Length: 286
Image (cartoon, rainbow, N blue to C red; front, side):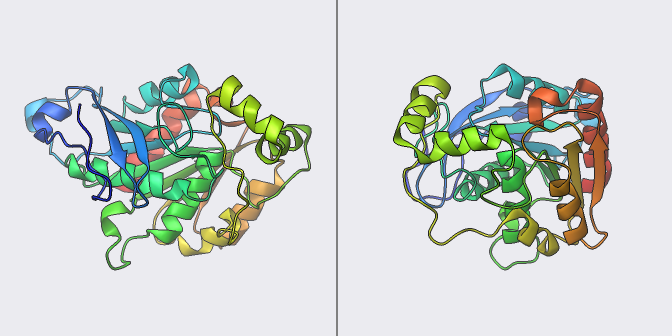
């Protein structure tokens, strides 16, 4: 499949009608607003319905994976398959991950990747989009929802109608757990970035943030009125429970908070939880 010329609005160069696209998986490269190519996949809904009666605007999930994940990894595919029971799914590899171009900025410029994927879902005919992110992706969906919230002039094409953040950090530079200290070594040390490149297929920038981007907890107050669900495990080895509680408190009662008996991100989210998230998104994105 050919790709869009750099600098154009993120879109697939194939322009399928919705009746076809919702039955046939599609794969293409999208282009972000800063010109990075993003490997992206569209999976049609597997929900049982009368296709001829289904309106073109039915729900699409846009899945944002965690750090070192990509669209082809089994734990990401399992999440995609679960949400496809509730609606169509757009998934993608963040910059620097898998077959996508660019370098990972570990949650900063990745907001542009998510915006490109949301625009593509809307191009395919979906008028309702729920963004669901895990770990790093969880921080990205929060920041995206604040920066691209509905009603901002020129940004509604890329905004979401419901947001689910799973296992996300509340604040940057957290090193209070052993896994996060290892992650900081991976990101900040030259030898760590080599491990990321060759061990995890993740290419990480050596540049420090400048300026430091809006943190997840700073983003949350700006998400309303978009429905928001915060999901976190009480056994999360990366981010302890003060992180989701801080996010929930910052929402001033707007967000739903689910504390679950689980560990961290996609690997820990079982099918039952993913099903409940799917149900919540269907109702919230209404």
